[in-house]
Amino acid sequence: MNFAEIYPFLIALLIGALIGTERQRRLVEDKVRGVAGLRTFVLIALLGSLCSSLSVHFGPGFAIASMATFTILVTVGYASSVSTLGRVDFTAAVAAVVTFALGMLTGFPDSILLAVALSIIATFVLATRKITHHYVEVLSETDLLDTLKMGIIALVIYPLLPETPLGPWGVLNPRQIWLFVVLVSLIGYAGYVAIRLLGAERGLALAGILGGLVSSTAVTSSMAAEVKESPEILPSAVFAAAIASCTMFPRILFIVLLVNRDLFFALLPHLLLMALVGSSLAYLLVRKNAPTRKEVKVKDPFRIIPALKFGAFFAFVLIISKLANVYFGDAGLYAAGIVSGLADVDAIVLTMASLAKSTVVPVVAVTTITLAAITNTLVKLCIAYVLGTKEFGNKIAKIFLPTVLVGLVALFLI
Image 1 (tube, rainbow, N blue to C red):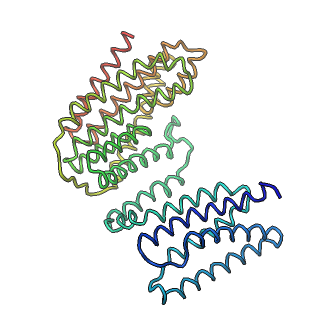
Image 2 (image 1 turned 135 degrees about the vertical axis):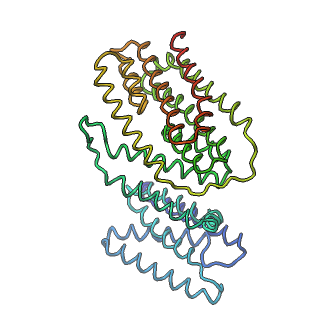
């Protein structure tokens, strides 16, 4: 016998101990008696691993029979304990069957990591009982329906859309456009959940930071829609949109650092200045002077119309970008940077960072990327006015315009 032979059984014991510890703690916390505790769950996982090992010799039918037999045994055991315990602990019964199945999974070398991951997830689900119960209690019918709508547009509609570019210029990719619709909806939904959990100020700020790592344009669009629906969250929404836009600058720097380290140091002063100016103005003009509100109510967590408007705007920008590209032709990389910034900065950033290693002068690459970031910031300012309110746009302008000005000055002076 060697360690490789006993390894699956040790993993099974650890899985049983993990789930069993949570079950034992639950019994102690609730001060009730239970059918199975720590030791029982350890043995259940070990039994599953043993049955999986024996199925190698007796065939897959043995594993199926073992699973069926154990499920029946658990059902009978927990059903007969009703008279003793005075209650039916159905969660514990299901947890026992899951533990047995995870123990069986450790018998397959390629599935050991999967078994460990699933055991951690299962334990997390069991341990968060109070949180999930509280969430269900405060969950309204609107929340439930909007969650289902979010699932439909992200998991049903999105996979069905074609990836082949359409239109006379081949720039309209339905799946790419719909992805931005999903992003806007998801950020708005996440912001709603964050507001419910953390309040308007901290909730929207968190949504802005995390959303900015994915798409600051989508965050701006989502916040514009939020303000139109609930004007009282204006300061928090402006701060979220501004922070998301400022997050774009370090995101660009991170992409460049991965591709071209030398270009990173050349680009650092330009984008760092823009990020510092934008975030400072967001704090001084909005966050610091924002009135304190006891409660903010956001009516509807899911609104598809603003997301569809942004999708249409994104498609329009793609067409304009293509026409400008055709008009400028090969006139220069600067025009390409401006045009690319209308839609997305990541593509031009990757291109310039790669070309700066060989065919493009680093100064030209830095200028092109900075112009793309400036153009993208101006596009988000337009979105703030078009999809949001005039007041929202004016407040965003007080932050974005100085940021753009600093970027332009940096291009000439640095």
